[in-house]
Length: 205
Image (cartoon, rainbow, N blue to C red):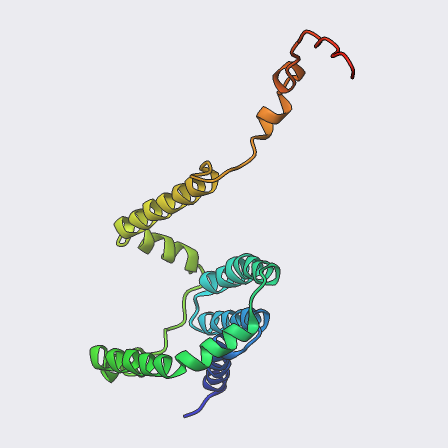
């Protein structure tokens, strides 16, 4: 039986699929980023329907509010060759379609339809009044998935250290100005005065 909840889910799912396809198909990179924002909004709505309120709000606040804003500024500041991107999209379109079909086939073959549907994943029961989604997520994350969580934190820390190191490393095999040395220069280091005896005046000159 089709309920209003199913209708809302199908609407969010259709918007998410269409906007995700627009991310890789539109020619303007700014519109591509905005399409990704619409995808995040749709997924946040689906997560809210699944009673994952904390994850839904985090998706909106962190990704839409911070990460995608940063992406949008970076894309707007970069000088992207639009004509080159257009030719590349048409050139690699068959390869992309084949790759999508291959991944979809592998997913269906590995997972199969036995893990989908209301019989395998029924609608969750109503939660009590004192239920906390954040408490349940934290207890699961720091107990059963504590080691994967710590490993992910170490990997992110290593990535941050590597990014900072690459950003602040000195120039390698290229000329660069040293502002500190330029400001600390002295006149006697720049100009050297040499006293030379005057040459005698030649006769008949």
